Image 1: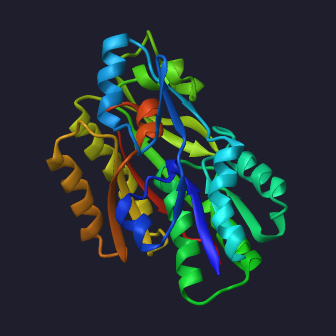
Image 2 (image 1 turned 120 degrees about the horizontal axis):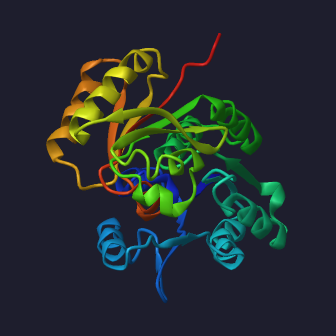
Length: 287
């Protein structure tokens, strides 16, 4: 049996996690002198309240080797193989930590670590590829690993953020940080390229109008995407109407088998801030 493990930044949501029996190892969020566990004892909206009150951004931290070992022992005891999905190694140490845990337990031969080179539901798209293959009856861990890795270069992760404040404080996107001070009204389109965050385009205006323009620019690309799954993911503090509108427009393409709408967890929320929305998909592979 192959078990799926992932860190908490995949943002698949409780229903998909339960459906595919995914073991989640949560990251941590440090707010002042208190430490919280992503998706366990902290909600994204609490981060905004604390940030506004203290004029700073909480700090995120990867899980420990001990956390990973404790999670992995269940698979070790039953002799199951494990495929683990982590946030981009350029943004966090979770992939390396899981490798260390497997080595410490002398279980590396039964573990595959997928460096998603991505974040949020960009990771989730890869997890669903693995889940579908395993569900079809594949029991060879290395075949699943090879199959999933073949999609990593084709995951497309973009989003438009409403405020530069959070991403500037987090320091994870230098291209966005350079806009601070001279262009506070810019709403950048953030993209993930080779596992790192960058600015792909700059919009201006009301966030709901920016989101519509962002989607209009994206729609031709969606028509040529891998048809299995697409995610509309957001960080809250957006009118429900605009979230429903974008999801509805994606569905109306009639291209995707599954259109998922999810709320990002604490880690993505901290760095992107409120009012962020993105559409995540996998590009079709060249023949």
